[in-house]
Length: 384
Image: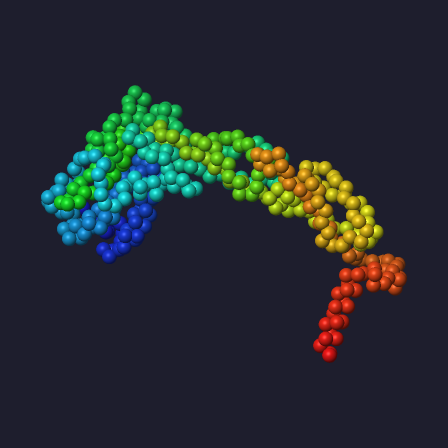
């Protein structure tokens, strides 16, 4: 059966740019990768075909040879050793290696790369992310939370090796354990992922029936997470080794807990400081007095309001704010008063206010008196 045209395999035209080739390869590789299609022979076949096509076209010299001679450029007829030639993975010149491509495709998470693939076929597991929402009270006090994380864990039957009990993985005879094969076409050399072991360097003759040779199975785990007092919105907590299990006994990835703090009905937060807006009556603002205000710790604190307090006046309660993570410091609580205008007045109340207004002078309302004096000067300036 003749090979399909490499451009058709990737689903691009012959004039496709390098970026278009890479994008097409990434999209198809994600769909056809063996990890996503366990037991699907057709997908495995297409994945091998996809790797072969991209290996040939991603390098300018290799692509030029293919455009001129087609598949004959790689079957040994051009003076090279052929695509199946054996050799080490060192000394490759031209294009990125396939391990870089797989790291880029499947190994990046939250800015970090997947760990290196060992010569024994072990691969580090993916990092996982868990989003958790907490109350401001919980951020103030700290808490111990339980999270349920669906993840991959090492297979207990094969102890993570992927091989059935009583057997073990063996060195790949195609690449001699390197995970890559090399082919020469005249004056240049092409390195590609081994089509037999898919870059792992080992093959399994008798795969484990529970994990189908992967060395890991899907399972939900319950983990305990300590949330320290004072955490802020967007805080990230790392649980080392609690991510996805590695392939065939490889090291596990990490679990990252991302915290978001819910808005509070009374308090607003700015770093370690808290702000609370408290309405007071016109009488309290005029005559002064004491008001009781809440704190996030659940206690009440009395604040003395001076005579003639205006809207926007702030009172600082030192040390009544949020704790600072990993520190003995504590923020402050700021109380901002708002003078409330009375509503739904009775006739008697209205009469009393009118009487009060009649008895008032500019000295009782210095701010408004000063403002309207400036307004009068402003208009007089226009008239003159």
